[in-house]
Image 1 (spheres, rainbow, N blue to C red):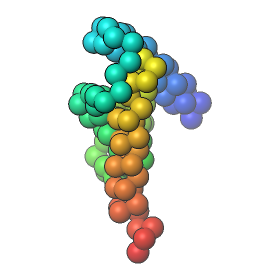
Image 2 (image 1 turned 135 degrees about the horizontal axis):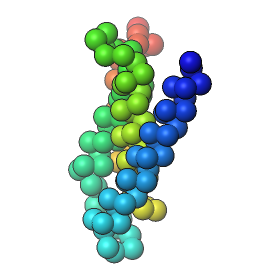
Image 3 (image 1 turned 90 degrees about the vertical axis):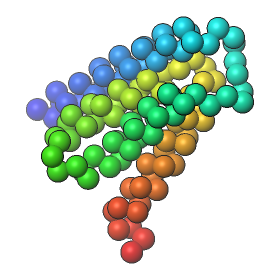
Length: 108
């Protein structure tokens, strides 16, 4: 049964990456922007990485559902055109990591 969940996670990540690429090409016509941070991509990245690292915090929703949403959001953020989404992904990983460390009791 675990193999089925892994296949679903991979499929959802690929679908999110393709949709992220399509949305990125629709939104950005120029080849590369260095200084801009996309707010939508930032929110998707934070939500995705937060759910991936902290899916055990919610006792009401199944971990499989939270992980599926997480992989879809991460796929949307990482699937952008080359050069886009890297800052947003780094910020999302840092925020999710800080919350994970704060709630897991690693420091205390």
